Image (cartoon, rainbow, N blue to C red):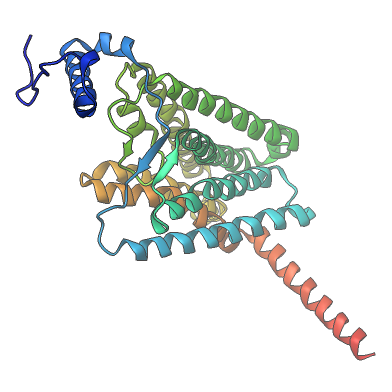
Length: 360
Protein backbone atom coordinates (compact mmCIF):
# COMPACT_ATOMS: atom_id res chain seq x y z
CA UNK A 1 0.00 0.00 0.00
CA UNK A 2 1.24 3.49 -0.86
CA UNK A 3 1.53 5.88 2.07
CA UNK A 4 1.37 9.68 1.89
CA UNK A 5 4.77 11.33 2.19
CA UNK A 6 3.63 13.48 5.14
CA UNK A 7 2.27 10.52 7.13
CA UNK A 8 4.47 9.22 9.93
CA UNK A 9 3.13 6.14 11.81
CA UNK A 10 3.34 6.15 15.59
CA UNK A 11 5.69 3.78 17.33
CA UNK A 12 3.09 3.08 19.98
CA UNK A 13 -0.33 1.54 19.45
CA UNK A 14 -3.36 3.78 19.80
CA UNK A 15 -4.59 2.02 22.91
CA UNK A 16 -1.24 2.47 24.64
CA UNK A 17 -0.81 6.17 23.90
CA UNK A 18 0.02 8.39 26.81
CA UNK A 19 -1.82 11.64 27.39
CA UNK A 20 0.94 13.50 25.55
CA UNK A 21 0.28 11.50 22.38
CA UNK A 22 -3.55 11.40 22.40
CA UNK A 23 -4.02 14.36 20.02
CA UNK A 24 -1.31 13.06 17.73
CA UNK A 25 -2.91 9.63 17.65
CA UNK A 26 -6.32 11.07 16.79
CA UNK A 27 -4.85 13.15 13.96
CA UNK A 28 -2.93 10.19 12.53
CA UNK A 29 -6.00 7.98 12.74
CA UNK A 30 -8.09 10.52 10.77
CA UNK A 31 -5.33 10.78 8.15
CA UNK A 32 -5.19 7.00 7.83
CA UNK A 33 -8.98 6.71 7.44
CA UNK A 34 -9.06 9.49 4.88
CA UNK A 35 -6.22 7.93 2.90
CA UNK A 36 -7.89 4.51 2.98
CA UNK A 37 -11.22 5.92 1.73
CA UNK A 38 -9.51 7.75 -1.11
CA UNK A 39 -7.48 4.66 -2.00
CA UNK A 40 -10.58 2.57 -2.70
CA UNK A 41 -13.10 3.31 -5.42
CA UNK A 42 -15.98 5.74 -5.10
CA UNK A 43 -18.56 2.98 -4.59
CA UNK A 44 -16.91 1.91 -1.37
CA UNK A 45 -16.76 5.51 -0.20
CA UNK A 46 -20.47 5.91 -0.82
CA UNK A 47 -21.15 2.91 1.39
CA UNK A 48 -18.94 4.19 4.21
CA UNK A 49 -20.76 7.44 4.97
CA UNK A 50 -23.67 9.61 3.92
CA UNK A 51 -22.94 13.27 4.63
CA UNK A 52 -25.85 15.65 5.19
CA UNK A 53 -24.39 19.10 5.90
CA UNK A 54 -25.77 21.39 8.58
CA UNK A 55 -25.41 24.42 6.31
CA UNK A 56 -24.21 25.69 2.92
CA UNK A 57 -22.02 28.73 2.32
CA UNK A 58 -23.30 31.14 -0.38
CA UNK A 59 -20.27 32.88 -1.93
CA UNK A 60 -21.53 34.29 -5.22
CA UNK A 61 -20.86 38.03 -4.94
CA UNK A 62 -17.66 37.74 -2.94
CA UNK A 63 -14.67 39.35 -4.67
CA UNK A 64 -16.65 41.60 -7.05
CA UNK A 65 -15.52 45.25 -6.72
CA UNK A 66 -18.04 47.92 -5.61
CA UNK A 67 -20.66 45.23 -5.14
CA UNK A 68 -22.35 47.15 -2.29
CA UNK A 69 -23.86 49.54 -4.83
CA UNK A 70 -25.36 46.55 -6.59
CA UNK A 71 -26.98 45.42 -3.32
CA UNK A 72 -28.66 48.83 -3.06
CA UNK A 73 -29.85 48.41 -6.66
CA UNK A 74 -31.33 44.98 -5.85
CA UNK A 75 -33.06 46.45 -2.81
CA UNK A 76 -34.66 49.20 -4.94
CA UNK A 77 -35.75 46.60 -7.51
CA UNK A 78 -37.40 44.60 -4.75
CA UNK A 79 -39.27 47.60 -3.33
CA UNK A 80 -40.59 48.58 -6.78
CA UNK A 81 -41.54 44.96 -7.46
CA UNK A 82 -43.51 44.62 -4.22
CA UNK A 83 -45.33 47.93 -4.70
CA UNK A 84 -46.03 47.40 -8.42
CA UNK A 85 -47.33 43.85 -8.17
CA UNK A 86 -49.41 44.65 -5.09
CA UNK A 87 -51.01 47.59 -6.92
CA UNK A 88 -51.83 45.43 -9.96
CA UNK A 89 -53.40 42.74 -7.77
CA UNK A 90 -55.45 45.28 -5.81
CA UNK A 91 -56.67 47.00 -9.02
CA UNK A 92 -57.76 43.68 -10.52
CA UNK A 93 -59.64 42.79 -7.32
CA UNK A 94 -61.36 46.17 -6.94
CA UNK A 95 -62.34 46.96 -10.53
CA UNK A 96 -65.21 44.84 -11.82
CA UNK A 97 -64.35 45.75 -15.42
CA UNK A 98 -61.11 43.78 -15.05
CA UNK A 99 -62.84 40.61 -13.94
CA UNK A 100 -62.38 38.96 -17.32
CA UNK A 101 -60.49 35.71 -18.08
CA UNK A 102 -57.34 37.50 -19.28
CA UNK A 103 -56.79 39.18 -15.92
CA UNK A 104 -56.89 35.87 -14.08
CA UNK A 105 -53.54 35.13 -15.76
CA UNK A 106 -52.33 38.69 -15.08
CA UNK A 107 -53.23 38.32 -11.39
CA UNK A 108 -51.41 34.97 -11.26
CA UNK A 109 -48.33 36.56 -12.87
CA UNK A 110 -48.34 39.42 -10.34
CA UNK A 111 -48.78 36.92 -7.48
CA UNK A 112 -45.87 34.77 -8.71
CA UNK A 113 -43.67 37.86 -9.17
CA UNK A 114 -44.47 39.19 -5.70
CA UNK A 115 -43.88 35.99 -3.76
CA UNK A 116 -40.97 34.86 -5.93
CA UNK A 117 -39.14 38.11 -5.22
CA UNK A 118 -40.02 37.90 -1.52
CA UNK A 119 -38.67 34.35 -1.29
CA UNK A 120 -35.38 35.34 -2.94
CA UNK A 121 -34.25 38.96 -2.63
CA UNK A 122 -34.56 39.61 1.15
CA UNK A 123 -32.55 36.48 2.00
CA UNK A 124 -29.94 37.28 -0.66
CA UNK A 125 -29.52 40.80 0.77
CA UNK A 126 -29.27 39.35 4.28
CA UNK A 127 -26.56 36.94 3.13
CA UNK A 128 -24.33 39.50 1.46
CA UNK A 129 -25.14 42.90 2.99
CA UNK A 130 -25.09 41.67 6.59
CA UNK A 131 -22.46 38.97 6.09
CA UNK A 132 -24.59 35.91 6.87
CA UNK A 133 -23.32 33.47 4.22
CA UNK A 134 -24.23 30.36 6.24
CA UNK A 135 -27.65 29.02 5.23
CA UNK A 136 -28.88 25.84 6.89
CA UNK A 137 -29.57 22.76 4.80
CA UNK A 138 -33.32 22.85 5.54
CA UNK A 139 -33.53 26.59 4.80
CA UNK A 140 -31.79 26.07 1.45
CA UNK A 141 -34.36 23.48 0.42
CA UNK A 142 -37.26 25.64 1.66
CA UNK A 143 -36.10 28.82 -0.10
CA UNK A 144 -35.33 26.80 -3.21
CA UNK A 145 -38.86 25.37 -3.33
CA UNK A 146 -40.67 28.72 -3.00
CA UNK A 147 -38.36 30.75 -5.26
CA UNK A 148 -38.16 28.06 -7.97
CA UNK A 149 -41.93 27.51 -7.90
CA UNK A 150 -42.72 31.20 -8.44
CA UNK A 151 -39.94 31.78 -10.98
CA UNK A 152 -41.00 28.73 -13.00
CA UNK A 153 -44.61 29.88 -12.98
CA UNK A 154 -43.78 33.09 -14.85
CA UNK A 155 -43.37 31.52 -18.34
CA UNK A 156 -46.52 29.43 -17.85
CA UNK A 157 -48.49 32.60 -17.11
CA UNK A 158 -47.08 34.03 -20.33
CA UNK A 159 -48.30 30.90 -22.13
CA UNK A 160 -51.83 31.51 -20.85
CA UNK A 161 -51.68 35.16 -21.98
CA UNK A 162 -50.36 34.21 -25.44
CA UNK A 163 -53.24 31.75 -25.88
CA UNK A 164 -55.64 34.52 -24.86
CA UNK A 165 -54.18 36.84 -27.52
CA UNK A 166 -54.25 34.08 -30.14
CA UNK A 167 -57.98 33.41 -29.69
CA UNK A 168 -58.84 37.13 -29.36
CA UNK A 169 -57.15 38.04 -32.67
CA UNK A 170 -57.68 34.94 -34.82
CA UNK A 171 -61.12 33.87 -33.52
CA UNK A 172 -62.67 37.06 -32.11
CA UNK A 173 -66.27 35.84 -32.56
CA UNK A 174 -65.56 32.67 -30.54
CA UNK A 175 -63.45 34.38 -27.87
CA UNK A 176 -66.15 34.48 -25.17
CA UNK A 177 -66.97 30.84 -25.84
CA UNK A 178 -63.42 29.46 -25.88
CA UNK A 179 -61.81 31.68 -23.23
CA UNK A 180 -64.19 31.65 -20.28
CA UNK A 181 -63.57 32.35 -16.60
CA UNK A 182 -63.81 28.65 -15.86
CA UNK A 183 -61.36 27.72 -18.62
CA UNK A 184 -58.73 30.30 -17.59
CA UNK A 185 -59.07 29.54 -13.88
CA UNK A 186 -58.73 25.80 -14.57
CA UNK A 187 -55.69 26.40 -16.80
CA UNK A 188 -53.89 28.60 -14.25
CA UNK A 189 -54.75 26.24 -11.36
CA UNK A 190 -53.43 23.29 -13.39
CA UNK A 191 -50.20 25.16 -14.07
CA UNK A 192 -49.72 25.92 -10.36
CA UNK A 193 -50.42 22.29 -9.40
CA UNK A 194 -48.00 21.02 -12.04
CA UNK A 195 -45.27 23.44 -10.95
CA UNK A 196 -45.64 22.69 -7.23
CA UNK A 197 -45.54 18.92 -7.83
CA UNK A 198 -42.52 19.12 -10.15
CA UNK A 199 -40.49 21.41 -7.87
CA UNK A 200 -41.32 19.25 -4.84
CA UNK A 201 -39.91 16.23 -6.68
CA UNK A 202 -36.85 18.16 -7.87
CA UNK A 203 -36.04 19.56 -4.42
CA UNK A 204 -36.85 16.24 -2.74
CA UNK A 205 -34.29 14.45 -4.92
CA UNK A 206 -31.56 16.59 -3.36
CA UNK A 207 -32.07 14.74 -0.07
CA UNK A 208 -30.65 11.56 -1.65
CA UNK A 209 -27.30 13.26 -2.30
CA UNK A 210 -24.31 13.06 0.01
CA UNK A 211 -22.37 16.33 0.24
CA UNK A 212 -18.87 15.28 1.24
CA UNK A 213 -16.93 17.38 -1.31
CA UNK A 214 -17.75 20.92 -0.26
CA UNK A 215 -20.53 23.09 1.16
CA UNK A 216 -19.59 26.27 -0.75
CA UNK A 217 -22.14 27.29 -3.43
CA UNK A 218 -20.50 29.72 -5.84
CA UNK A 219 -23.68 31.54 -6.73
CA UNK A 220 -25.81 34.35 -5.36
CA UNK A 221 -28.48 31.93 -4.12
CA UNK A 222 -29.25 28.23 -3.57
CA UNK A 223 -28.53 27.18 -7.15
CA UNK A 224 -29.85 23.68 -7.84
CA UNK A 225 -27.30 22.90 -10.55
CA UNK A 226 -24.32 23.90 -8.41
CA UNK A 227 -25.66 22.11 -5.34
CA UNK A 228 -25.98 18.78 -7.12
CA UNK A 229 -22.44 19.17 -8.48
CA UNK A 230 -21.17 19.20 -4.88
CA UNK A 231 -22.52 15.68 -4.29
CA UNK A 232 -20.06 12.82 -3.99
CA UNK A 233 -22.52 10.07 -4.91
CA UNK A 234 -24.42 9.46 -8.15
CA UNK A 235 -26.39 12.56 -9.22
CA UNK A 236 -27.40 11.38 -12.71
CA UNK A 237 -31.11 11.20 -11.77
CA UNK A 238 -30.99 14.79 -10.51
CA UNK A 239 -29.37 15.91 -13.76
CA UNK A 240 -32.01 14.19 -15.88
CA UNK A 241 -34.87 15.69 -13.85
CA UNK A 242 -33.23 19.13 -13.95
CA UNK A 243 -32.84 19.09 -17.75
CA UNK A 244 -36.34 17.74 -18.22
CA UNK A 245 -37.96 20.43 -16.05
CA UNK A 246 -35.89 23.17 -17.72
CA UNK A 247 -37.22 22.04 -21.08
CA UNK A 248 -40.77 21.71 -19.77
CA UNK A 249 -41.02 25.05 -17.95
CA UNK A 250 -38.67 27.24 -19.99
CA UNK A 251 -38.02 26.16 -23.58
CA UNK A 252 -41.39 24.54 -24.31
CA UNK A 253 -43.32 27.68 -23.23
CA UNK A 254 -41.00 29.79 -25.40
CA UNK A 255 -41.67 27.57 -28.42
CA UNK A 256 -45.43 27.76 -27.80
CA UNK A 257 -45.40 31.56 -27.46
CA UNK A 258 -43.32 32.04 -30.61
CA UNK A 259 -45.58 29.63 -32.49
CA UNK A 260 -48.68 31.59 -31.40
CA UNK A 261 -47.30 34.91 -32.60
CA UNK A 262 -45.95 33.40 -35.81
CA UNK A 263 -49.41 32.05 -36.57
CA UNK A 264 -50.99 35.41 -35.69
CA UNK A 265 -48.60 37.20 -38.04
CA UNK A 266 -49.19 34.66 -40.81
CA UNK A 267 -53.00 34.90 -40.62
CA UNK A 268 -53.01 38.70 -40.42
CA UNK A 269 -50.70 38.95 -43.42
CA UNK A 270 -53.28 37.03 -45.47
CA UNK A 271 -56.55 38.66 -44.48
CA UNK A 272 -55.88 42.05 -42.88
CA UNK A 273 -54.74 45.44 -44.07
CA UNK A 274 -51.66 47.18 -42.70
CA UNK A 275 -53.74 49.34 -40.35
CA UNK A 276 -55.63 46.30 -39.04
CA UNK A 277 -52.34 44.47 -38.42
CA UNK A 278 -50.93 47.41 -36.48
CA UNK A 279 -54.13 47.68 -34.46
CA UNK A 280 -54.08 43.94 -33.69
CA UNK A 281 -50.44 43.90 -32.63
CA UNK A 282 -50.97 46.95 -30.41
CA UNK A 283 -53.11 44.73 -28.20
CA UNK A 284 -50.11 42.39 -27.86
CA UNK A 285 -47.40 44.94 -27.05
CA UNK A 286 -47.67 44.49 -23.27
CA UNK A 287 -47.48 40.71 -23.53
CA UNK A 288 -44.65 40.76 -26.07
CA UNK A 289 -42.71 43.11 -23.78
CA UNK A 290 -43.11 40.67 -20.88
CA UNK A 291 -41.92 37.79 -23.07
CA UNK A 292 -38.83 39.74 -24.17
CA UNK A 293 -38.01 40.87 -20.62
CA UNK A 294 -38.17 37.32 -19.30
CA UNK A 295 -36.57 35.23 -22.05
CA UNK A 296 -33.86 37.51 -23.48
CA UNK A 297 -31.88 37.77 -20.20
CA UNK A 298 -32.24 34.01 -19.70
CA UNK A 299 -30.79 33.27 -23.15
CA UNK A 300 -28.03 35.87 -22.69
CA UNK A 301 -26.85 33.96 -19.61
CA UNK A 302 -25.34 31.30 -21.88
CA UNK A 303 -23.16 33.93 -23.59
CA UNK A 304 -21.28 34.79 -20.38
CA UNK A 305 -18.14 32.81 -19.60
CA UNK A 306 -16.78 34.81 -16.66
CA UNK A 307 -18.31 33.52 -13.38
CA UNK A 308 -18.94 36.98 -11.91
CA UNK A 309 -20.70 38.24 -15.06
CA UNK A 310 -22.84 35.12 -15.16
CA UNK A 311 -23.79 35.45 -11.48
CA UNK A 312 -24.82 39.10 -11.89
CA UNK A 313 -26.81 38.30 -15.04
CA UNK A 314 -28.60 35.44 -13.27
CA UNK A 315 -29.49 37.73 -10.38
CA UNK A 316 -30.97 40.24 -12.84
CA UNK A 317 -32.93 37.45 -14.56
CA UNK A 318 -34.69 36.66 -11.27
CA UNK A 319 -35.23 40.27 -10.10
CA UNK A 320 -35.79 42.49 -13.16
CA UNK A 321 -38.90 40.80 -14.69
CA UNK A 322 -40.92 40.88 -11.42
CA UNK A 323 -40.15 44.61 -11.17
CA UNK A 324 -40.87 45.50 -14.81
CA UNK A 325 -43.98 43.34 -15.36
CA UNK A 326 -46.40 45.53 -13.34
CA UNK A 327 -44.86 48.73 -14.73
CA UNK A 328 -45.41 47.52 -18.30
CA UNK A 329 -49.00 46.44 -17.62
CA UNK A 330 -49.86 49.74 -15.94
CA UNK A 331 -48.30 51.81 -18.74
CA UNK A 332 -49.29 49.75 -21.79
CA UNK A 333 -52.68 48.22 -20.92
CA UNK A 334 -55.59 50.57 -21.52
CA UNK A 335 -57.96 48.84 -19.09
CA UNK A 336 -55.52 49.14 -16.17
CA UNK A 337 -54.78 52.77 -17.07
CA UNK A 338 -58.52 53.53 -16.87
CA UNK A 339 -58.78 51.68 -13.55
CA UNK A 340 -55.83 53.62 -12.06
CA UNK A 341 -57.42 56.91 -13.15
CA UNK A 342 -60.71 55.86 -11.57
CA UNK A 343 -58.98 55.05 -8.28
CA UNK A 344 -57.21 58.42 -8.22
CA UNK A 345 -60.51 60.21 -8.96
CA UNK A 346 -62.21 58.35 -6.12
CA UNK A 347 -59.38 59.31 -3.74
CA UNK A 348 -59.65 62.98 -4.76
CA UNK A 349 -63.42 62.94 -4.22
CA UNK A 350 -62.96 61.33 -0.80
CA UNK A 351 -60.41 64.00 0.19
CA UNK A 352 -62.74 66.80 -0.96
CA UNK A 353 -65.71 65.36 0.96
CA UNK A 354 -63.60 64.89 4.10
CA UNK A 355 -62.41 68.51 3.91
CA UNK A 356 -65.97 69.83 3.48
CA UNK A 357 -67.19 67.75 6.43
CA UNK A 358 -64.36 69.07 8.62
CA UNK A 359 -65.09 72.69 7.62
CA UNK A 360 -68.80 72.30 8.39
